[in-house]
Image 1 (cartoon, rainbow, N blue to C red):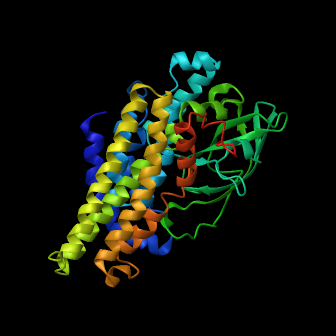
Image 2: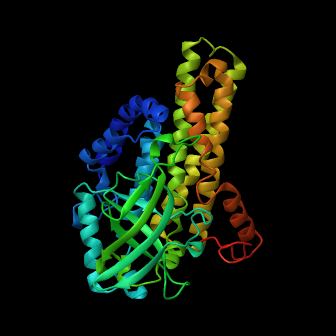
Image 3: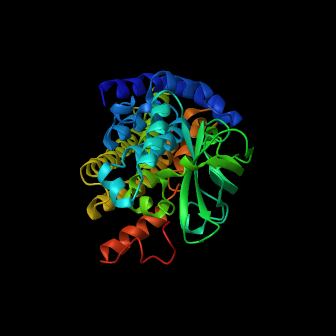
Length: 388
């Protein structure tokens, strides 16, 4: 990746920040932010250079996501979903494709989707369901083979960017064999219905509404061209399901510190030692979390799916989520009651930061995973509930 992407993210962040309060208040989608992302070429961030993209590494994605989140965490969170789709697709090497049995025509279809992203298309993720969360093994959305393709039917929840994306990564279960879970890239449009359900505590601008599907798609929209790859990919690439969120919440934590510093200086409160100490602790905690995210990302680039890499991935998600919430709460208290008014940046950032521990995998799930690993068990299999 050239320096262009990181510079673009830093340039766009103030624009996003200027629009953030309005979108948070109204629960509206930041359409202009996504127009800016498209114009900057960032939808091609994770697309290989050979297909017209920037060919970023996971570490480079994390740096870009952190900067975007300093502007608007909601925008960065939706962008994360697109990066997860394109990043996972772009990471399927010829060796991995051969090991998974991916046919050549499926690789060609994947390349078409990635090329479209480099040209400005963006993708959302439609995985979670009511009562199942993001656990692939518990999904009820189904798919059935039809002449020339597949029929998908079901309902998804927490679909960030619903109604705005050009396509949706949909996880569904085979009607022929309930143990088989596959993923499809479903075009936006006919057969998809958005139910406006998103009215949340934080990240209000993500438009994470419910998405109802009763749609037929061509055969080449089955990702990988082989049924049953969804759970395999989740285990091979947990960084896109877990750690990619982490970079966003590091950015939210840093934004909270920046907003607190501006508020405290404006109110002549910076002379209080207790106030300075809160900002100092917040700065140190955020820097530590960012280092863990960076280490996880470095290991993902060098040894994806490795046992020790995955430990760092889960550590990153746990620490980023808890740190963002703790930092935002502490600096809000330092800023005082005036910063709790609706419309104040710290009030919004406090609510956005609180969502970090709730995204899958939640902080409790991450901690349980790491605890089982520390005890010498297999954290992907030894938990009381299936991870995916």
